[in-house]
Amino acid sequence: MRDQEHGTGHPERRLSTKEAAELLGVKPETVYAYVSRGQLSSRRVPGGRASTFDAQEVEALARRNRRDSAGSPGSGAELSVRTRLTFIDTDRYYFRGVDAVELASRHSYEEVAEWLWTGRLEPGATLTASEPSVAAARRAVDALPEHTGPTDRLRVAAIAAATTDPLRFDLSEDAVLATARTLIPTLVAALPPRRHDHRDQGPLARRLWGRLSGRDADEASLHVLDTALGLLADHDLAASTLAVRVAASARAHAYAAVSAGLGVIEGPLHGAASGLAHRLLLEVLDQGDAGPVIAEELRAGRRIPGLGHRLYPGEDPRARALFALLEDLPAAGPALAAARDIVATTARHAPLHANVDLALAVLTVSSGMPSTAGETVFAVARTAGWIAHALEEYGERPLRMRPSGHYVGPKPPRRLPEATEA
Image (cartoon, rainbow, N blue to C red; front, side):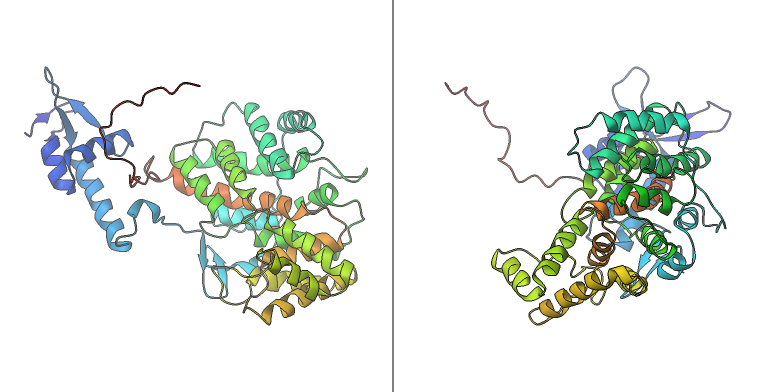
């Protein structure tokens, strides 16, 4: 069935469900699944129950499906995400085609963030929080129990800040960028200070230092922290970033998308991994030898934190860059030696190299920071990348991040279960 309607003076070709299914190469039921996911729109036939579909919209979806299938055969096209942000090579990675280590080493975290968001380098870029968002975030965070972890604090701060922004549902690029430039400093400002002379102005690394350490920060230490933030700003589709893109695909606003990322990052295999490496370093420093500490970890069946990365066969380039900077910090000497001892001891049994979690642990241990500090650095840094990915996803068709489940349960239909007596 094909008809033509003249809503605007231009003919519109409509397809029946059967014709749409044939063009897409799917069953009629799948056509309605596309409708439920927002990938197709349908219109009822006047006076009937059948649906019709815009031919151009169906043809465009068929072209996308063919293109995705050609680029990723048999892997589930909806899980293959095109991105212009980060490319990971054998032992290097790039932000928008630029070597990420060089970028983070020569430019501030704020400038790296702007590069990820806009593709433009903005010398002297700053991030400024609004007073209402900071006030709301601090009130919410201050109400949490004292033992609350940093990721929970950041997640609560993000949601509290969202309530002060009546424009949060505007997903235009300019609006999302405005959110990004205020949300990240709001998250930092909401964290409890560890110094009486903490700052809420100036470079973000300096502001964050006062939330992580009670010690004075020299310029060399601040440069290490600032570089760490830049290096960690993005890393392709890590688990938390995928969660952000799923939220953005459903058109959640930027605050909610960041909250989704924070919900994932707390796992011990992701953002919290640096805390495990921090505690391992302290044990090695306490015993003066990595041998017995590593032996106990292996005896307990635990993997050694801070070692190995599935994307890098050799040393994590982020770790390599941070270790080079940490060598210039006299206070980092003992922790650096302990980290090298861990790597050398483990290398006798497995060809594992240091990853960024071990390098972060050297920074946090040598700076008198708590074991959760690396997780905080990771979360604050990665917020820039999350927002960059959300911006990309807002430009894609909605609800595309919706894989189909492979049902392996009992074959339906089954009889209703009978209630059991207590």
